[in-house]
Length: 83
Image (cartoon, rainbow, N blue to C red):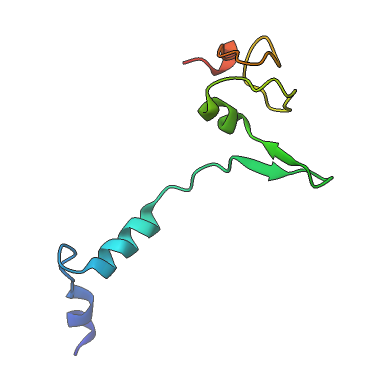
């Protein structure tokens, strides 16, 4: 085959499940991680994790997005995070 014909070849994605899966996996937006390990090896939950959780756990978390801070069950986000 000529180079021109190779560049024009396409696969019908509706019938090719492998290509569909490839497209899905390569176009996914990577989610922000929900935690990381600090310099001491402790697991630290991110602000986005706490927001997804929906309420404060009351464990004095480093990235607590709720006001007032560290009150278990609190669902009031800091003003800077409210849309």
